[in-house]
Image (tube, rainbow, N blue to C red):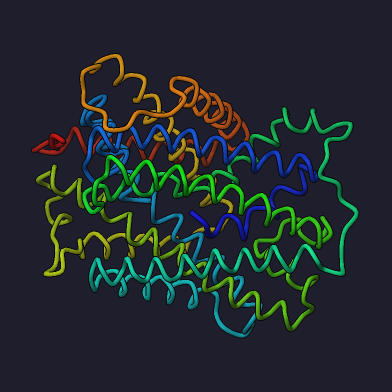
Length: 416
């Protein structure tokens, strides 16, 4: 979870939300939404234990065509776009260390490196992920600790004041939530690799609940430090907000060092999506004869062809799109799929009450309903404010629907 969004999102929020309280409340709401969604996904993963995430869940709950649409989105841009965004951020931060290098070459190079790591073996890829993730968390803890005692501070308050209520209920707040939920992307990641997790009925709920809660605390603390040390005008519109804040805490030389360390953290984000995304594509290949080649695994059990196909899409996005357009385009469709998946918890409780559930979502039905309300509010404002990108996301889904119905052998999801 911890990755690109926390080091890039704040710059797109301080303009429409010039309030320390409103921004921290924004990140709190995002954490609550992600936590409620994680609890719901954990119930589905425990009851329907198979790798594939939304592709598998939606196929079992509604119809194979609905699952195929989600899988199609994941296989085309659902994971490729976040990888591309992380690679763009990596290039931007690395420019703070070595500004003469080509951003395109840097972003493509780091994507290819992650691909090579995960094509090698599952064990090697997972160990690499653990090491880089621990480094990334340690980096945030150090950043927060040093930022609190920074000699350079800004006169920004984090308690509510007049006008904050209007900001919290405004359309810009809902649009800013898009960037926040992108930062929390990964709260459902372990459900995509259920088939590779020991005792999923126990470990999946633990991973999503504990992970989401911990990340929410880290995000609130880090954003508070960014706002505490850097002027809003300096952060506004910037992708590399961590580098901007580091310059105020450590000075130019220290800022460059921190930018380099953040680059290492961003590698972890690229690695995570490179690891997880192809597992969805692999599941589609297992179910659809026309896509059977995507299910091929090498001698180490890695879906190599699915990884390579995803990498090609990432490279194409890096060469043709900008950060903001890619984010808005993909977030609408992904949020819609998450909405349907969490709704599926309620549907499945009604249609299959006797289904064995090793884990049941805590706080049901309030937790899934809270997720649905927040996500629905966000979807409405995304479409209203960015109709072109939202329609492009819907067109991507419609293309997938056409592929499904035109396929000579329609995919049928496997039983759990």
